[in-house]
Image 1: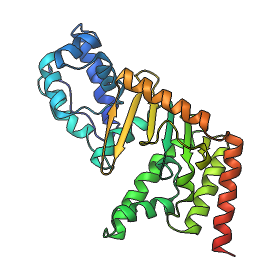
Image 2: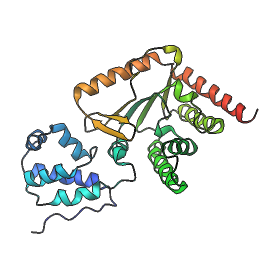
Image 3: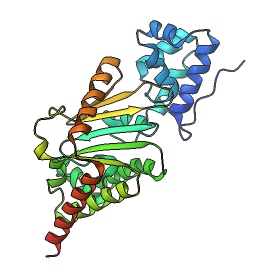
Image 4: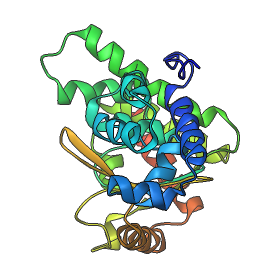
Length: 279
């Protein structure tokens, strides 16, 4: 009997790979926990691979082939699943983001990617890559705008963002770019497509002064955290760490302005930037 066919990389390879993993595991009579023990990972990690919220890495693909007797099926096809238009450190997080049912995020220094306009994103990428050709920035901006298309759905995912006032006052790209960026955020909030709160300077010390928070919830997989640094990032699903970061996020929302007052501040700052552009 012929073995399983290679996956088509044009048809959601991670989802197909996850479905094949679930099929092979159940055919072997193993639970997620039992298979995880053979790979020295948690059962929830196996669940995330099956749900497609985690990318299958080559070392795990090889171990899965050995544990499940699937020849080199997962080893071959994890290469197709690994293809991404995003930087390597962010690719897995971007893919998880696209499947999340809820995203809660705090950003201390810039407007998060899902809320950015093309001009704002270009200004950010130019700051990161001062010598990059325009064509490269075009690719990066296009990928970021494609990410934001998850907001085209009127309800899913739930997006709840706490913006630090510093991110709104940092003149990224100049007053025209900032005015457009803040009007865009205000529009999303007015259309009830995003819950937006601003953490004002007057709040003083707060629960996440050491960095950003990004929590992603899923229908059939544990919550994931994304930690990001300069040119680096990784996903974390440790229950204790997730619980602590969620607690920090809840404290931030308690310290932030209400959504109504936040919207008023965002719109006022947008008007200030627009006035600077056209005094």
